[in-house]
Length: 383
Image 1 (tube, rainbow, N blue to C red):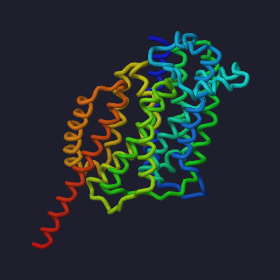
Image 2 (image 1 turned 135 degrees about the vertical axis):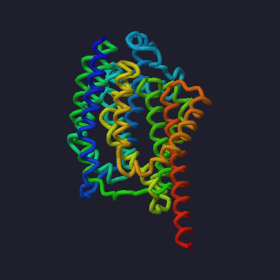
Image 3 (image 1 turned 90 degrees about the horizontal axis):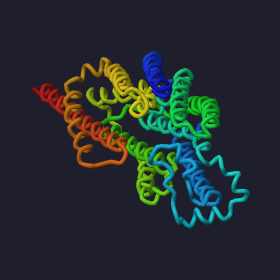
Image 4 (image 1 turned 120 degrees about the vertical axis):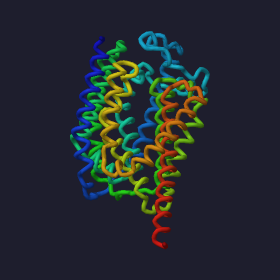
């Protein structure tokens, strides 16, 4: 076993344990009171993405100006799928021609993104939490122990991957990632504790709206990873419509809130599963993801199943077990179809579609079950 695999596996085990120890306590704790004003994680996420793409533009200009567009000096240390450059792009050429002291832009290769990657992924996760419930976001990312555990887990995983792909900049990247961790954790907790939004108890419409937000955030993350964090700015020409669509959906879902009637027990149980899953998976999420490539997949699968089982171990969930099980079965069938019908370059794209299909189908089935139960009670009352 390599050092990278050992580190990733150890992080999976430790992260799952941390999530299971810290998460349930937060789920039982009432949301802290609203305090002050803050900046929504969506806004900061867009800001970080802008910095990521600015770095990519400067990086491509640097590569063109200093290395004549030859990226072999860095790709020799990396697996396939990195540094697809936008050859012949007029904007890149213009910036390259105007770069003052071009050799000073060397850190745009690998190092700047090492600083930005951690806040990018955690702000994306925070946005998901806030879209489901601002109070949940305030509770979860306002928890110092949970946030520091997540930051430590993610930083160790990113560092292990860096170590597994050794290059002349590895040591610098490790230091940069440590600095990023020290700055990101207090930023997240400060912002979350000042969140003023109230708790939400969405009905079926609210969960469907959340599903749209979840898709948009996931799509945004995947496009940014492909076109920027893997330095494939040359792919942006084909993927910018996806990027704009994701941003548009995020904007619309932030402004448009459907009527929120009190959901029935089945919809409420599904909402509880989502909340519990997001809280419990926060710390181990990245370690489990990277186990597919760098660790022991069986260990990651076991950890994910354990966390998922605890997310389901909840009284309201057990009370609505039949509609949840039926919705889950039909939803898994729909998810399988979405995966089978489309061939993806990255398996995360298929996973995102499957998650969305599962959530939509389960929401509709649970809403139907609640409606039938309500109609049955009405008939009994009339009788």
